[in-house]
Image 1 (cartoon, rainbow, N blue to C red):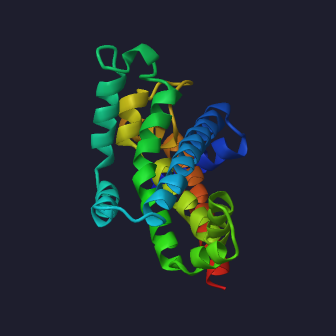
Image 2: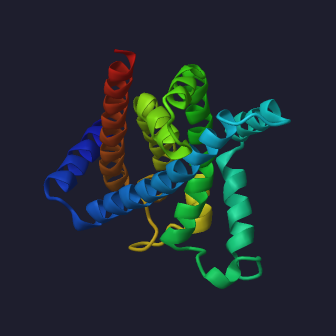
Length: 231
């Protein structure tokens, strides 16, 4: 217990001193997760719109496939990305392995099914009333899409926040494709795992406090968004 209290005090001291190593890791974590979440939501919105606003054979199977992909383990996505981005892989010429770019690719693939599934649920809950109303008023496809997105904007924001929190807390996949290189690809989750193994609990606890604070902040924002959507 005494060692734990001492480690906590030292961790708080590192945060109070604005230790450069800690904040470099924190900023890289946020930058990578934010970039991957933005890529994923930019793909998820038009994809979910195309699925829900068009009638085609196998539509239910496509929606089921999207929902099934949400359950794919992150480590499997990491393995696939590693094989694709390695030097002997089909995308090895990109030279992305063990770089922030590789982590962004993997995290985007992890968040995409989740965000798409949430967007599809939001659009399905809206039904066809808005679309039919806008068609009656003579709106074109572009204006119809913008109008529908406006109706479900809070749900889309909630989908983005949920996906962001998912990728921010990922460890194994990020370590596989990023390599956990100090000053290059070391993010909060991988650093916490490494420092705990090394017995450097002060740095691990300090990063854990920051990660917990970010997670709580994301949850608060999500609750506020959902509250506004409910009203």
